[in-house]
Length: 205
Length: 205
Length: 205
Image (cartoon, rainbow over all chains, first blue to last red; front, side):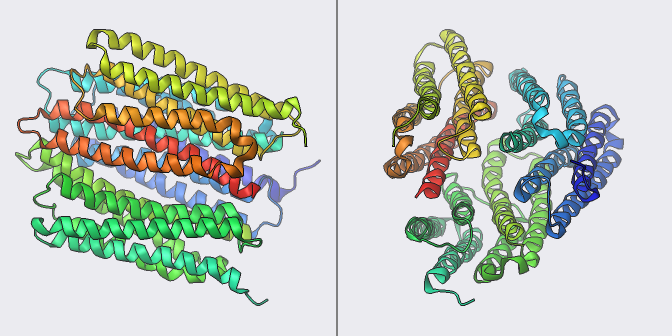
């Protein structure tokens, strides 16, 4: 069976959408390493990336509405695009809140969480062209699940450290928690992307 | 094609369910404007509305189980009813927590958030009869998405103001945040309603 | 119609998975009654149970991929397994956070919340063999919905008490809230399990 150009369009669009996650994860790395004064610029770049993500999602929806044949169930492609978008929303919110709350210092360990997001983003971007043979992507969803598990552990230790530090200022703790909650939520969101891929694979098998 | 009475029943029931959201949003407007002593009465009315919502949902489920033909996939109608119910649950929780926590003063900006919920409720109630021609409802889900986007911005500024106010009492901040979190969650829940409508439209197109 | 061994396999696996929820709820009861020094041991047992849950979920996924015929839509079985897993994840997180945050004392009322989780777990474990006649399980999802409703009420009163106690330490309030949030989330997760069962019943009816 040869793939027609129309078929490959969906894989290209999903690959583009997932590529934005790699950009987003890179911006998060910058966000937590630059001085506070430069964070707003990084958050703005994140916002631009989030808009590119919205465009990619809309393009996928448009293709769904105008294509006679789609490689998978329409609603599964829609769900996958929407789940990829959710990841970028979480990243964008994390960056936005870091600026809004004027977080002075990120707690030690936050870079480990951001690094895990970077790995999940790369794996997702690499998996999307492979959607052509979705039943062979089990390594992808297993690795994403393992990363989510690790992210969860890092997150809990971050919180324990944050809450158990003597003399911690409650409002600072709350604000910092809001930001790292969004990072943990992004890790969960990657798992939801992987779940949709697994669901499609179950249907195709 | 003529619609049979059985077919129109689902659209009527969804319209009724969405009508409760308009009532709920109106009660939220009252909640944040009446003196603290009268809030419990408003929260009780909200609770009554939430029960009407449960009844509407149950009626839809019953119709699904007893109808031979349904205008869309059964599970999509079920999901739509359940998503409408979720909005009312969030509104009810916001009202309930405002009373339970004895919030003395809502932060400036909360009325903007409630107003957006009112607009989303009206749009949803107006869209439900239009489900007959669901593929023509793209303006609905686009507007709801735009409102959710605005609500998100208002919410973040509300939080920033709440957290960054000098000398803020941490417990008061936490309690207030809980209430406005439920309002933001209601805005998200409207988007989830719109997502289901869009999903149905994709299938029908 | 006689069920083939292959068919009964799914019901057995779902029953096993739901059985882990009964174990989990039992461990939560222990967690809130043992002295603080023994909590880590209970949390470890919970973690072991959560791994058993993961194994059960994986076994179901494997069966889905290797079975030619399944009693319900593959993706519904997958979703049900995943929703059961979510309950155990919440229970595990609650136990983990109670240890990590070194919660000295649980607020009065938390045992009522845990008891409701125990009832929901027992109902779920009893319902799974009955999936063979899923359309007859309406009592199950109605009872779970009623339990979730009660859990919600208990949860809100717990929070009101926690926040409105004079001289409460903000960080202690935050940490305690995190743990009871996970318990409330477990109650919600039971409702999501019941929702999937109801969805399957709607399709089968």
